[in-house]
Image (cartoon, rainbow, N blue to C red):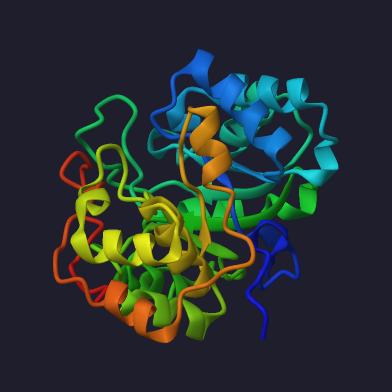
Length: 298
């Protein structure tokens, strides 16, 4: 089998929708930078842009999309409902659509399984949790403004809780989670596969100043392939069956992250990367009013 041209690949979700395998992440991208980054990505061939209400940059993401001249229907847009908006799903999606300047999004995610009280961000609502939020989100697809719904940062424990809810009707199409060789989460990935839920990998390069870039094993593989460590990390994620959303605001890196066609990692190389012993998480849950990670994803 010839290596895949990942820039043209999609993963089919449980709804039948096809999510482009590689997208541009925009977390921690400043508003003025993100407009240019989105335009550069789309002009380089990206067709998947990931943002969120919490990032405060949806308006600029929308402007970058317009600047690119790429037709809306060719682009997959994911955005997310912010924690303090859990009781206001309708307002949340309307706010995002208005900021983005679009009539619909391809994927709308619950950003975190935490229904945070907007009056006090250190507190969780006493009378509402993510199961109630999901009940409201399930109403969105039939309105046409959201093509697919999903979750983010959901551990097995919270997914089980969601599935057991009496209001549960629609299986999330996607769970967007932190995935890289130092947070590989094989047990969680297996669980998602079993449930027909696609995983999108965020912080797939290990985020800003990633320690992975200095890893000797990764550097060795990259050198052998004549590729960058970043490109090796992306191929590793793609070959595991996850879509990847590397974030960058630098045009040269945005382009380099898209140069993953026509080569692959062999089984030995995949195994080496999957066996790296170090562990770290870019995103913990200490800032949330509730615990959402339970150390059960390996």
